[in-house]
Image 1 (cartoon, one colour):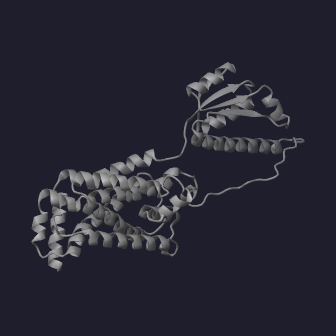
Image 2 (cartoon, rainbow, N blue to C red):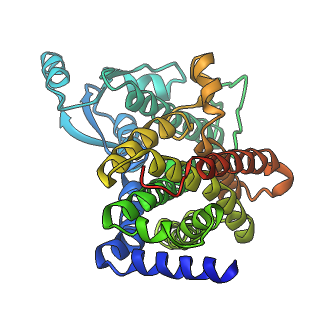
Length: 376
């Protein structure tokens, strides 16, 4: 029994690794994709194109504008002298936001009165603009705090500036609120799914196309031995890819790994059970490798959309939320983000591990039942 399985594993490794292009797909492509996705998949907003109409042109107004530009979030691309220019700049998309400071701004600030600053925003990109508004609010809050501190430090009676509530906020796990730290672990799960399903979905189909299925039909190999011979090599390749991609996340993108590496590998094993099961199911219903690749594509896209990688699951319609429970990627994303960012253990992640193990067992069992050692 073990001798047959050993020869099956050797054959599969030789068949997979003898092609230089396949070796690059296994090793090089995931690393390159991780770097590309790591830079591309981010909601951080930098260098917002800012127009400025400073009618006061005082030390106080220039200080406020300096706070905006020195933050790294805003970049002044146009100084406006007349109100007629505003509409044209907004229509053409040359500025995404515009700040207008009226005459008398400095007098009101120094006199302890409320000074108004107008900010116009291009709302066509609602996500970017909502983030820009948040940035602007924080910059103005720091500016106000500095003015209050200067008033208290000045000799003599200070203007009456009071704040009813002082909010002191703190973000756990991702103190700088870097979206890259949030998305990169999810990219690891996504790339692992794409690579493993692509390789395993063509496993049985390739036997038919190159004519080795007839040879397997006359051997005493059993059905479950054949399935193990097809899944174990790709499972080991998946574990290797996890280590390579994790190294890129840690040393290239500086994403923290606060949890256990061994727990991450254990989660990867149960996740790979589902991915290999899906790939083998696709392989059993496809006649050519092209069909297998297209079927894998039609599985991967909905799996990503339903996983919560881009869009929160709780914002989806109820019937769609039910469908997400059948998506292994949903559970593994929780696992990798919990291990990388929170450092949590099996005491917190056991529901995800249990769901992945159940889905993986069901998918592998179904793939094994569907496989028949026949040409039809």
